[in-house]
Length: 375
Image 1: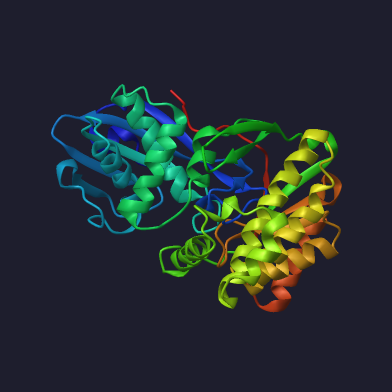
Image 2 (image 1 turned 60 degrees about the vertical axis):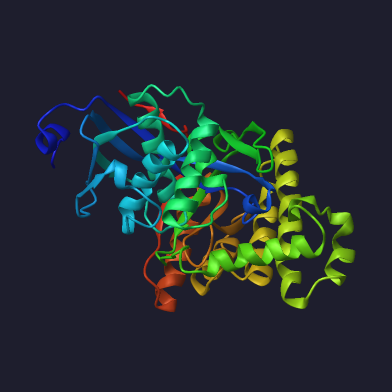
């Protein structure tokens, strides 16, 4: 394993970490300025870093990717293809916002599964934002760093994601879910004591890779924005459940399911927060399952593998399950009794084998810490 000193001939100035995330409920609501409820995972992207005075950005990854050397002054949207666009985009976004930052040597490592719907890209962006914030003495608050990281993904990489992933990676706290209002970024840490309730949150990575830059995600967002415009709303967040039936009657048929999902999903987030506040974690199960049905039938971002994982987990005794993340593959979460976790995971694995699918990877989600300096 190449250490930072072996790579660059000098010690790092520090090391930072930023986590992946699991979203309990609130999918495809953030870019509609709605509610989300993510937790941070223990799995993180880590960055050792040291400043450079010559304007070069040198990036090395322990995941075996080709090392990259870039000139900070030459960074522009679309100029850095592939994985390196995410960290490079953060440096560009900081400079574009008027912050005087220069080059750096970076050594990256990660145990956040890539392409699993667990926001490995946001974790990569956020660890760079946290590192640069300290290295260059910017003094920016976590929420502002999250917004800059989102801008990197939107404008530099070209993925029109909402703000949830970056806010989760920057702002989540241990033992809590982040109840985030994407309209004004108001947030509240809602306690989630899974172990105290005798529960566990399984994450079942279907190993189906998704590419949110392939146009499908952008088309969904464009459809929602078109629907809001037709209804005379700034965003679908402004449409309340009481007005849903009337609104749907005024829309073209192809937009009806998108709007129905967004409005009902926002309501599911608020219901989930009320249950967490009341300490009734088991009752979250049906909300998760209803959320999956909406993503499958209305938003149509599920796939056979995620559907099978949800159906099998629920049949095996999970209180509820749903796909998490943008969709088109990725992971499923299942709320289970602690003593049933291994059995539920085993039954999903058996079902995948019988269907001829790759064996899913399983981990247990424990609400963790957002981006931070390690040393």
